[in-house]
Image 1 (spheres, helix red, strand yellow):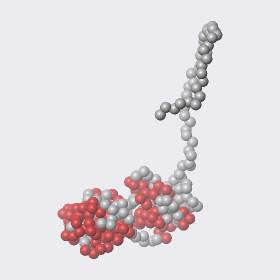
Image 2: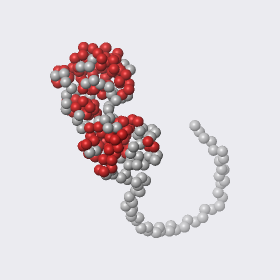
Image 3: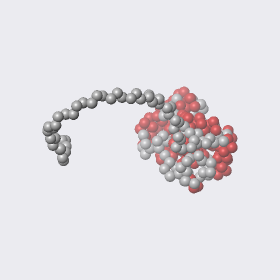
Image 4: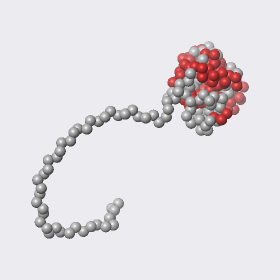
Length: 260
């Protein structure tokens, strides 16, 4: 679009003779300016103070006192149904999974019964869960593999569980911990948030947080540690509006935005 100026000055003709040109004045030499090295940037926030072993022990002592025997919220009746429930829980809520699996596990609580049920019928049971078609296919495939390669029993190593369709590291850690009592740390969205927000185990990936937590949490707490952290993130250290005023560890938490 052409923009027309509101006012255009009219140039008059110059009738005077031009002034004689002056001899050019030599420019003064200027010293080269040497750039100074950049000063270190000032930190806008104070570096987060590391947790001491005594503080970490105090945190989990409080969790233990408040809830001595924490339980996972996924309903199951044996290691196989736990495995299936965890696979189904990806990008879904525990409550939503439980609603679907109560009826499912009444008719299919073993790998063979799951195969007998078949993928099409399985879809009908879990169709209220997100990505149910893909998950149904994975559950049937993992059931077949558990039967053919592991004698119908859920394997007891992380590598073997991760080899099953639909099962990743978090699934393996949950099964190893809840079914077999291993001291593993399953990092879901809640544990990831708590690890980073509190400063207990900051990390950019779930694996970094997992390894960081395993490094700092005393062995005496590791059996239940991931449940305490999940429940803390789910009901207290909420994503949008953390309930700092009722937090058991608000005096120790390193989060600079805490409201107490």
